[in-house]
Every structure is written in structure tokens, then in C-alpha cells.
Length: 101
Image (cartoon, rainbow, N blue to C red; front, side, top):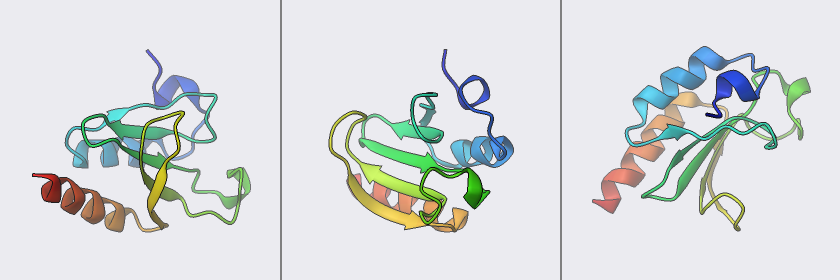
């Protein structure tokens, strides 16, 4: 099974796992062929990309650490949120899921 633990030499695994526990319905969808670890909510078609904390390790260093997208892996995805604020990710996703009912 692919997880952040075996797919990435990741410097922020503890925060990744903490975020995963705060977002109900999300599973670790990290895959080493992607640019960074991710977690997915299949029913809502949401993906949270969790990039490296170190800007120098990011593929596109100017991007934010967290990106929330709507869509499925491999398909076109709509960017819903880009931020460096972990708390904002939690707030946004929880409200997004609540709005779905």
C-alpha cells in the first residue's frame, strides 16, 4: 500500500498525519510519481496536496505548501485554495464538506 511513509522522503510527516486525522473521510493518497504527498476524499472528489515545508524542496518553489483541488487524480482539477496556513486548510475543507451535506 502506498503511503506518505514509503513514497516520499518527506520532512513533515507528523503534520501530514495530524492533518489527515483532522479531515474526516480523507485517506492518504500519496504516490511517489506525484510532486508531493496528498490526501483524498473520494466522495467529495477533493484532494489536498501537502508540499514540502522547505521551499527549496518544492518543485515550484513559489507555490504555497497546501493546495486543495476538486477533481480526480489524472483528470483536470479545479484549484479551490492555495495557502501556507494549515489551519485555513482545515477550516476550508470542513466547511466545504458541511456545505455538501
